Image (cartoon, rainbow, N blue to C red; front, side, top):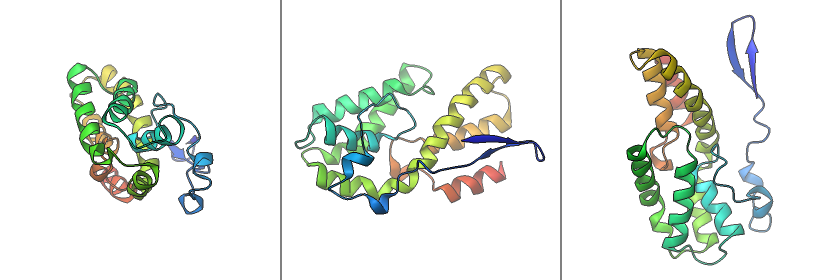
Length: 178
């Protein structure tokens, strides 16, 4: 949720109550937390969509075709990708980030993907900010140094490869220095 603080005149992000409690996720209840496969839900990062795909769509080992399907749908849904060149680049990065999972079942894939859970809320915030920044850059033009700096930072938080995403603490530190 986002509130607007009248005293400081800034937006306030509150209530991360819907964040995933990974300490409670077990093999027996995974499908309750990763409850549907909808790659058009852009605030979830690609690895969450892969987990959901493997739980709900293709319960066997991940195939190259399955990975391509997930990455294509995730890429197509991204609102911040401006043209086909950006889409092709994002798709390539997405495929590269997860290609090592081809041939693995959900248990092995999940254990490799769940280690990035601490980047998932930051990813969601990056998507939300990127959507608004695209509108602001369109209105202001690309010469606004502040908007370019913030935009560059949030591009990193929504990188398809979780290894390349900054932590929430790093994002906050860098945001404060812009």
